[in-house]
Image (cartoon, rainbow, N blue to C red; front, top):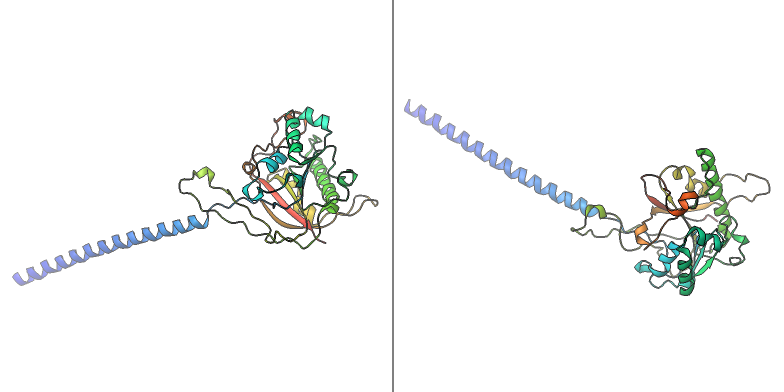
Length: 312
């Protein structure tokens, strides 16, 4: 009985020891798994570091700005450009507005001071320029631009019927794409770099974990490439229903026999337009109360820029 009791006691001790060892190993494995998960999360965090914003200009570009409103984007470009555009000559900027000079100052009281400062800086400011009839502007005839930019185009007709409103703005975009084509520089199709990611500061607030700093540019900035058109819209309905990329790449046939067909474009890229990159830029609407900053450009979504060059 004594021997049996000893064997039973030993077996119990061994079982207990094995149980403790097993628990110890499980705890070790759990700890190792937690470390691996932490390392994986950190690696993923690095992989998803915020993108740098795309700055679609170089310091050697000749830039034509369409539909400038109060000229605050032109001011940002001339006076407070991103670091990569520090040496962009103001004389390389031509800023235009659809309104007459008098109407512009009536709509946007701050425009007079901005225009005066732009002209003193050396930028060219033109009024009464129709985006769909650029050839009618004597000051633009015979000139070529490496970038033609229209931020937040809108027909501004106040049409309440959505289908008619969409059609009105599609016709505006088609007219612009047709009108701007002869003013683009010729050359090879630009090759654009993929956007780079910046290293995220661990002290960054979560709300700032977006694209910041830097520039994404054409690879060979010393060679003249085909000029590009940049159009920025809200990437939310009803603006997405205008179908800008499709209008540029596969335009519909002319509405009348006397009208020239629209040229076909290549979409080079699209990217988030960060207003904060352009110091003191204010998007101004031009219809009714909207002309005084009371309008909205769609709920939610983002501002997005599409960049195109001519197919041929």
